[in-house]
Image (cartoon, rainbow, N blue to C red; front, side, top):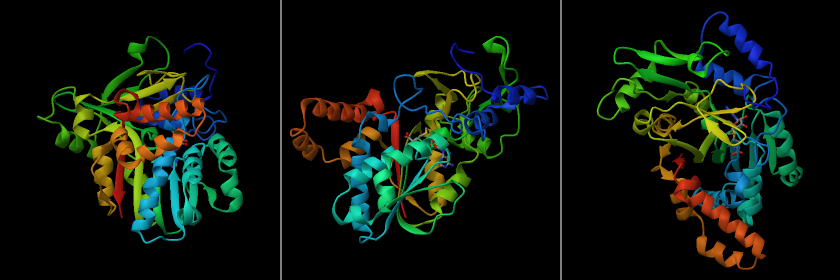
Length: 363
Ligand SMILES: C[S@@+](CC[C@H](N)C(=O)[O-])C[C@H]1O[C@@H](n2cnc3c(N)ncnc32)[C@H](O)[C@@H]1O
Protein backbone atom coordinates (compact mmCIF):
# COMPACT_ATOMS: atom_id res chain seq x y z
CA UNK A 1 0.00 0.00 0.00
CA UNK A 2 1.45 3.44 -0.91
CA UNK A 3 1.98 5.84 2.05
CA UNK A 4 -0.84 8.19 3.14
CA UNK A 5 -3.63 6.16 1.55
CA UNK A 6 -6.40 5.72 4.13
CA UNK A 7 -7.90 2.32 4.86
CA UNK A 8 -10.86 1.44 2.62
CA UNK A 9 -13.24 -1.37 3.74
CA UNK A 10 -13.30 -2.69 0.14
CA UNK A 11 -9.95 -4.29 0.97
CA UNK A 12 -11.68 -6.58 3.49
CA UNK A 13 -14.41 -7.47 0.98
CA UNK A 14 -11.74 -8.39 -1.57
CA UNK A 15 -9.75 -10.46 0.94
CA UNK A 16 -12.92 -12.44 1.71
CA UNK A 17 -13.48 -13.12 -1.99
CA UNK A 18 -9.85 -14.16 -2.40
CA UNK A 19 -10.13 -16.66 0.47
CA UNK A 20 -12.43 -18.65 -1.87
CA UNK A 21 -10.50 -18.20 -5.12
CA UNK A 22 -9.24 -15.64 -7.61
CA UNK A 23 -10.91 -12.36 -8.61
CA UNK A 24 -10.98 -11.30 -12.31
CA UNK A 25 -9.54 -7.82 -12.88
CA UNK A 26 -12.85 -6.49 -14.28
CA UNK A 27 -14.74 -7.60 -11.15
CA UNK A 28 -12.05 -6.00 -9.02
CA UNK A 29 -12.44 -2.78 -11.05
CA UNK A 30 -16.22 -2.85 -10.63
CA UNK A 31 -15.85 -3.14 -6.84
CA UNK A 32 -13.02 -0.61 -6.55
CA UNK A 33 -14.87 2.06 -8.55
CA UNK A 34 -18.55 1.31 -7.92
CA UNK A 35 -18.93 -0.45 -4.56
CA UNK A 36 -22.16 1.28 -3.42
CA UNK A 37 -20.59 2.85 -0.31
CA UNK A 38 -16.83 2.76 -0.59
CA UNK A 39 -16.16 2.68 -4.36
CA UNK A 40 -13.90 5.39 -5.76
CA UNK A 41 -16.90 6.98 -7.54
CA UNK A 42 -19.37 6.32 -4.73
CA UNK A 43 -17.54 7.48 -1.57
CA UNK A 44 -17.87 11.14 -0.60
CA UNK A 45 -14.41 12.25 -1.75
CA UNK A 46 -13.76 14.44 -4.76
CA UNK A 47 -10.90 13.12 -6.89
CA UNK A 48 -10.77 15.56 -9.81
CA UNK A 49 -8.28 18.40 -10.02
CA UNK A 50 -4.66 19.26 -9.45
CA UNK A 51 -3.13 19.66 -5.94
CA UNK A 52 -3.99 16.78 -3.63
CA UNK A 53 -6.28 15.11 -6.21
CA UNK A 54 -5.70 12.04 -8.37
CA UNK A 55 -6.28 13.17 -11.94
CA UNK A 56 -7.61 16.00 -14.06
CA UNK A 57 -9.75 15.94 -17.18
CA UNK A 58 -10.02 18.38 -20.10
CA UNK A 59 -12.58 20.32 -18.06
CA UNK A 60 -10.03 21.25 -15.40
CA UNK A 61 -7.94 22.95 -18.07
CA UNK A 62 -10.51 25.61 -18.95
CA UNK A 63 -13.82 26.20 -20.74
CA UNK A 64 -12.73 25.70 -24.36
CA UNK A 65 -13.90 22.11 -24.76
CA UNK A 66 -17.40 23.13 -23.61
CA UNK A 67 -17.30 26.19 -25.88
CA UNK A 68 -16.31 24.07 -28.90
CA UNK A 69 -19.05 21.53 -28.15
CA UNK A 70 -21.62 24.35 -27.84
CA UNK A 71 -20.69 25.47 -31.38
CA UNK A 72 -20.89 21.89 -32.73
CA UNK A 73 -24.29 21.33 -31.10
CA UNK A 74 -25.58 24.68 -32.38
CA UNK A 75 -24.91 23.31 -35.91
CA UNK A 76 -26.75 20.08 -35.07
CA UNK A 77 -29.70 22.14 -33.78
CA UNK A 78 -29.82 24.02 -37.13
CA UNK A 79 -29.50 20.77 -39.13
CA UNK A 80 -32.41 19.27 -37.18
CA UNK A 81 -34.52 22.36 -37.96
CA UNK A 82 -34.27 24.02 -34.54
CA UNK A 83 -36.04 21.56 -32.25
CA UNK A 84 -37.31 23.10 -29.03
CA UNK A 85 -36.46 21.59 -26.64
CA UNK A 86 -33.05 20.45 -27.81
CA UNK A 87 -32.06 17.93 -25.14
CA UNK A 88 -28.41 17.40 -24.24
CA UNK A 89 -27.96 14.26 -22.18
CA UNK A 90 -24.53 14.06 -20.59
CA UNK A 91 -23.72 10.57 -19.37
CA UNK A 92 -20.97 10.27 -16.74
CA UNK A 93 -21.28 14.03 -16.26
CA UNK A 94 -19.16 14.25 -13.08
CA UNK A 95 -19.14 17.76 -11.60
CA UNK A 96 -21.32 19.18 -14.39
CA UNK A 97 -18.50 21.38 -15.66
CA UNK A 98 -18.91 20.44 -19.31
CA UNK A 99 -22.64 21.25 -19.05
CA UNK A 100 -21.85 24.55 -17.34
CA UNK A 101 -19.26 25.54 -19.95
CA UNK A 102 -21.46 24.71 -22.92
CA UNK A 103 -24.58 26.32 -21.42
CA UNK A 104 -22.55 29.47 -20.74
CA UNK A 105 -21.20 29.52 -24.29
CA UNK A 106 -24.47 28.78 -26.16
CA UNK A 107 -26.00 31.79 -27.88
CA UNK A 108 -29.30 33.11 -29.28
CA UNK A 109 -32.40 30.97 -29.74
CA UNK A 110 -30.25 27.85 -29.54
CA UNK A 111 -29.33 28.64 -25.93
CA UNK A 112 -33.01 29.07 -25.04
CA UNK A 113 -34.00 25.71 -26.51
CA UNK A 114 -31.37 23.65 -24.61
CA UNK A 115 -32.52 21.25 -21.90
CA UNK A 116 -29.42 19.80 -20.26
CA UNK A 117 -29.59 16.51 -18.35
CA UNK A 118 -26.73 15.61 -16.00
CA UNK A 119 -26.50 11.85 -15.43
CA UNK A 120 -24.02 10.43 -12.93
CA UNK A 121 -24.63 8.44 -9.74
CA UNK A 122 -21.49 9.67 -7.97
CA UNK A 123 -22.79 11.49 -4.85
CA UNK A 124 -19.86 13.91 -4.66
CA UNK A 125 -20.14 14.67 -8.39
CA UNK A 126 -23.83 15.47 -7.92
CA UNK A 127 -23.05 17.80 -5.02
CA UNK A 128 -20.50 19.66 -7.12
CA UNK A 129 -22.86 19.71 -10.13
CA UNK A 130 -25.56 21.40 -8.02
CA UNK A 131 -23.13 24.29 -7.55
CA UNK A 132 -21.77 24.40 -11.12
CA UNK A 133 -25.24 24.21 -12.71
CA UNK A 134 -27.06 26.30 -10.08
CA UNK A 135 -28.18 29.03 -12.51
CA UNK A 136 -29.63 26.60 -15.09
CA UNK A 137 -31.16 24.31 -12.45
CA UNK A 138 -33.05 27.35 -11.11
CA UNK A 139 -34.13 28.47 -14.56
CA UNK A 140 -35.41 24.95 -15.36
CA UNK A 141 -32.95 24.48 -18.23
CA UNK A 142 -30.92 21.80 -16.44
CA UNK A 143 -31.74 18.81 -14.27
CA UNK A 144 -29.91 15.93 -12.60
CA UNK A 145 -31.00 12.35 -13.16
CA UNK A 146 -29.95 8.99 -11.77
CA UNK A 147 -28.50 6.34 -14.08
CA UNK A 148 -31.53 4.09 -13.55
CA UNK A 149 -34.09 6.86 -14.32
CA UNK A 150 -35.79 6.61 -17.70
CA UNK A 151 -35.32 9.53 -20.08
CA UNK A 152 -38.20 10.67 -22.31
CA UNK A 153 -37.58 10.38 -26.02
CA UNK A 154 -35.81 13.46 -27.38
CA UNK A 155 -34.16 15.26 -30.27
CA UNK A 156 -30.73 16.60 -29.38
CA UNK A 157 -27.41 15.11 -28.35
CA UNK A 158 -25.79 12.55 -26.10
CA UNK A 159 -22.39 13.70 -24.90
CA UNK A 160 -19.71 12.32 -22.60
CA UNK A 161 -16.15 13.06 -21.56
CA UNK A 162 -14.11 10.15 -20.21
CA UNK A 163 -17.12 7.96 -19.46
CA UNK A 164 -16.19 4.80 -21.34
CA UNK A 165 -12.65 4.59 -19.92
CA UNK A 166 -14.23 4.32 -16.45
CA UNK A 167 -16.26 1.17 -17.22
CA UNK A 168 -14.99 -2.11 -15.72
CA UNK A 169 -12.70 -3.78 -18.28
CA UNK A 170 -11.01 -7.19 -18.39
CA UNK A 171 -7.50 -7.78 -19.80
CA UNK A 172 -7.20 -10.99 -21.91
CA UNK A 173 -4.16 -12.72 -23.45
CA UNK A 174 -3.80 -15.51 -26.01
CA UNK A 175 -1.03 -17.93 -24.93
CA UNK A 176 -0.87 -19.71 -28.29
CA UNK A 177 -3.27 -22.48 -27.23
CA UNK A 178 -5.95 -20.89 -25.06
CA UNK A 179 -7.29 -17.59 -23.74
CA UNK A 180 -6.30 -16.33 -20.31
CA UNK A 181 -7.69 -13.49 -18.23
CA UNK A 182 -5.85 -11.44 -15.63
CA UNK A 183 -6.96 -12.19 -12.07
CA UNK A 184 -5.98 -11.15 -8.57
CA UNK A 185 -4.95 -13.98 -6.29
CA UNK A 186 -3.76 -12.10 -3.21
CA UNK A 187 -3.48 -8.59 -1.81
CA UNK A 188 -0.41 -9.43 0.28
CA UNK A 189 3.13 -10.17 -0.77
CA UNK A 190 5.46 -9.18 -3.60
CA UNK A 191 3.80 -7.34 -6.50
CA UNK A 192 4.88 -10.04 -8.94
CA UNK A 193 2.94 -12.76 -7.08
CA UNK A 194 -0.36 -10.94 -6.61
CA UNK A 195 -1.87 -11.44 -10.06
CA UNK A 196 -1.76 -14.18 -12.65
CA UNK A 197 -3.22 -15.17 -16.02
CA UNK A 198 -5.92 -17.81 -15.61
CA UNK A 199 -7.47 -19.91 -18.40
CA UNK A 200 -11.12 -18.96 -18.98
CA UNK A 201 -13.80 -18.95 -21.66
CA UNK A 202 -13.52 -15.55 -23.42
CA UNK A 203 -16.92 -15.58 -25.15
CA UNK A 204 -17.22 -12.81 -27.74
CA UNK A 205 -13.94 -11.23 -26.64
CA UNK A 206 -11.90 -14.09 -28.12
CA UNK A 207 -13.54 -13.80 -31.55
CA UNK A 208 -13.21 -10.03 -31.50
CA UNK A 209 -9.47 -10.06 -30.71
CA UNK A 210 -8.83 -12.85 -33.25
CA UNK A 211 -10.62 -10.85 -35.96
CA UNK A 212 -8.80 -7.60 -35.20
CA UNK A 213 -5.22 -8.79 -34.58
CA UNK A 214 -3.27 -7.50 -37.56
CA UNK A 215 -1.21 -10.27 -39.13
CA UNK A 216 -2.98 -12.91 -37.01
CA UNK A 217 -2.97 -13.55 -33.30
CA UNK A 218 0.49 -14.19 -31.79
CA UNK A 219 1.17 -15.67 -28.33
CA UNK A 220 0.81 -12.98 -25.64
CA UNK A 221 -1.47 -10.84 -27.87
CA UNK A 222 -4.71 -9.62 -26.37
CA UNK A 223 -6.43 -6.49 -25.14
CA UNK A 224 -9.08 -5.22 -22.75
CA UNK A 225 -12.76 -6.11 -22.99
CA UNK A 226 -15.63 -4.06 -21.55
CA UNK A 227 -18.43 -6.57 -21.12
CA UNK A 228 -21.06 -3.96 -20.15
CA UNK A 229 -20.49 -1.75 -23.22
CA UNK A 230 -23.40 -3.01 -25.42
CA UNK A 231 -25.89 -2.78 -22.58
CA UNK A 232 -24.79 0.69 -21.46
CA UNK A 233 -24.80 2.02 -25.02
CA UNK A 234 -28.27 0.65 -25.60
CA UNK A 235 -29.58 2.39 -22.47
CA UNK A 236 -27.87 5.67 -23.33
CA UNK A 237 -28.95 5.75 -26.99
CA UNK A 238 -32.52 4.48 -26.57
CA UNK A 239 -34.23 7.80 -25.79
CA UNK A 240 -32.60 9.76 -28.65
CA UNK A 241 -34.99 10.04 -31.65
CA UNK A 242 -32.64 12.10 -33.74
CA UNK A 243 -29.43 13.93 -33.09
CA UNK A 244 -25.74 13.46 -32.42
CA UNK A 245 -23.79 11.08 -30.20
CA UNK A 246 -20.49 12.69 -29.23
CA UNK A 247 -17.99 11.01 -26.92
CA UNK A 248 -14.52 12.17 -25.97
CA UNK A 249 -12.33 9.51 -24.50
CA UNK A 250 -8.88 8.10 -24.64
CA UNK A 251 -8.38 4.88 -26.47
CA UNK A 252 -7.48 3.46 -29.82
CA UNK A 253 -8.60 1.15 -32.58
CA UNK A 254 -8.89 -2.58 -31.77
CA UNK A 255 -5.75 -3.59 -33.80
CA UNK A 256 -3.62 -0.97 -32.06
CA UNK A 257 -4.84 -1.96 -28.60
CA UNK A 258 -4.04 -5.60 -29.36
CA UNK A 259 -0.61 -4.57 -30.69
CA UNK A 260 0.15 -2.70 -27.49
CA UNK A 261 -1.41 -5.41 -25.27
CA UNK A 262 -3.70 -3.00 -23.49
CA UNK A 263 -4.34 -3.50 -19.78
CA UNK A 264 -5.66 -1.61 -16.79
CA UNK A 265 -4.12 1.60 -15.55
CA UNK A 266 -4.24 3.15 -12.11
CA UNK A 267 -4.12 6.84 -11.19
CA UNK A 268 -3.17 8.02 -7.73
CA UNK A 269 -2.07 11.59 -6.94
CA UNK A 270 -1.26 12.18 -10.61
CA UNK A 271 1.00 9.15 -10.83
CA UNK A 272 0.00 6.42 -13.24
CA UNK A 273 1.07 2.76 -13.23
CA UNK A 274 -0.18 -0.74 -13.95
CA UNK A 275 -0.63 -1.73 -10.28
CA UNK A 276 -4.40 -1.95 -10.58
CA UNK A 277 -4.78 -4.06 -7.42
CA UNK A 278 -3.29 -1.45 -5.12
CA UNK A 279 -5.46 0.81 -2.87
CA UNK A 280 -8.90 -0.35 -4.15
CA UNK A 281 -11.52 2.38 -3.69
CA UNK A 282 -8.85 5.01 -3.07
CA UNK A 283 -7.28 5.21 -6.51
CA UNK A 284 -8.72 5.54 -9.99
CA UNK A 285 -8.76 2.61 -12.39
CA UNK A 286 -9.13 3.07 -16.10
CA UNK A 287 -8.64 1.31 -19.43
CA UNK A 288 -8.19 2.50 -23.01
CA UNK A 289 -11.47 2.47 -24.89
CA UNK A 290 -11.68 0.10 -27.87
CA UNK A 291 -12.96 2.70 -30.33
CA UNK A 292 -13.46 0.15 -33.12
CA UNK A 293 -15.89 -1.71 -30.89
CA UNK A 294 -17.59 1.47 -29.64
CA UNK A 295 -18.17 2.51 -33.27
CA UNK A 296 -19.37 -0.98 -34.24
CA UNK A 297 -21.87 -1.02 -31.35
CA UNK A 298 -23.17 2.44 -32.24
CA UNK A 299 -23.87 1.17 -35.76
CA UNK A 300 -25.74 -1.75 -34.23
CA UNK A 301 -27.91 0.83 -32.40
CA UNK A 302 -28.82 2.31 -35.79
CA UNK A 303 -26.49 5.34 -35.61
CA UNK A 304 -24.19 6.44 -38.45
CA UNK A 305 -20.66 6.86 -37.07
CA UNK A 306 -18.42 9.51 -38.58
CA UNK A 307 -14.70 9.17 -39.20
CA UNK A 308 -12.79 8.96 -35.92
CA UNK A 309 -10.84 12.15 -35.11
CA UNK A 310 -8.20 12.94 -32.54
CA UNK A 311 -9.25 15.64 -30.09
CA UNK A 312 -6.69 17.97 -31.66
CA UNK A 313 -8.13 17.44 -35.18
CA UNK A 314 -11.68 17.83 -33.91
CA UNK A 315 -10.96 21.12 -32.09
CA UNK A 316 -9.18 22.55 -35.13
CA UNK A 317 -12.09 21.53 -37.39
CA UNK A 318 -14.90 22.75 -35.11
CA UNK A 319 -13.64 25.64 -33.01
CA UNK A 320 -13.71 29.19 -34.47
CA UNK A 321 -10.01 29.76 -33.84
CA UNK A 322 -9.74 33.13 -35.62
CA UNK A 323 -12.80 34.45 -33.77
CA UNK A 324 -11.47 33.21 -30.45
CA UNK A 325 -8.11 34.83 -31.11
CA UNK A 326 -9.78 38.18 -31.81
CA UNK A 327 -12.02 37.89 -28.74
CA UNK A 328 -9.10 36.97 -26.51
CA UNK A 329 -7.36 40.22 -27.43
CA UNK A 330 -9.98 41.95 -25.30
CA UNK A 331 -9.15 39.87 -22.21
CA UNK A 332 -6.69 40.66 -19.45
CA UNK A 333 -3.20 39.27 -20.11
CA UNK A 334 -3.55 36.47 -17.50
CA UNK A 335 -6.89 35.31 -18.96
CA UNK A 336 -5.58 35.46 -22.51
CA UNK A 337 -2.61 33.30 -21.50
CA UNK A 338 -4.92 30.83 -19.74
CA UNK A 339 -7.06 30.47 -22.92
CA UNK A 340 -3.99 29.91 -25.07
CA UNK A 341 -2.73 27.26 -22.67
CA UNK A 342 -6.16 25.61 -22.65
CA UNK A 343 -6.10 25.48 -26.46
CA UNK A 344 -2.58 24.05 -26.52
CA UNK A 345 -3.49 21.31 -24.01
CA UNK A 346 -6.47 20.25 -26.13
CA UNK A 347 -4.59 20.25 -29.42
CA UNK A 348 -0.88 19.49 -28.94
CA UNK A 349 -0.18 15.82 -29.80
CA UNK A 350 1.68 14.99 -26.59
CA UNK A 351 -0.83 16.80 -24.39
CA UNK A 352 -4.46 15.71 -25.01
CA UNK A 353 -4.49 16.34 -28.76
CA UNK A 354 -3.56 12.84 -29.93
CA UNK A 355 -4.27 10.64 -26.93
CA UNK A 356 -7.92 11.65 -26.79
CA UNK A 357 -10.32 10.82 -29.61
CA UNK A 358 -13.74 12.09 -30.57
CA UNK A 359 -16.39 9.56 -31.57
CA UNK A 360 -19.36 11.12 -33.36
CA UNK A 361 -22.40 9.32 -34.74
CA UNK A 362 -25.63 10.68 -36.20
CA UNK A 363 -29.16 9.49 -35.90
C1 LIG B 1 -13.59 9.57 -15.42
S1 LIG B 1 -15.04 10.24 -14.70
C2 LIG B 1 -15.39 11.58 -15.82
C3 LIG B 1 -16.26 12.65 -15.23
C4 LIG B 1 -16.49 13.88 -16.08
N1 LIG B 1 -17.11 13.55 -17.34
C5 LIG B 1 -15.22 14.68 -16.31
O1 LIG B 1 -14.72 14.68 -17.44
O2 LIG B 1 -14.72 15.28 -15.36
C6 LIG B 1 -16.25 9.02 -15.10
C7 LIG B 1 -17.61 9.29 -14.48
O3 LIG B 1 -18.54 8.38 -15.09
C8 LIG B 1 -19.50 7.99 -14.12
N2 LIG B 1 -20.15 6.76 -14.63
C9 LIG B 1 -19.67 5.51 -14.72
N3 LIG B 1 -20.56 4.66 -15.30
C10 LIG B 1 -21.64 5.41 -15.61
C11 LIG B 1 -22.89 5.15 -16.25
N4 LIG B 1 -23.21 3.92 -16.69
N5 LIG B 1 -23.75 6.17 -16.41
C12 LIG B 1 -23.45 7.41 -15.99
N6 LIG B 1 -22.28 7.73 -15.38
C13 LIG B 1 -21.38 6.75 -15.20
C14 LIG B 1 -18.69 7.87 -12.83
O4 LIG B 1 -19.50 7.96 -11.68
C15 LIG B 1 -17.71 9.05 -12.98
O5 LIG B 1 -18.20 10.20 -12.35
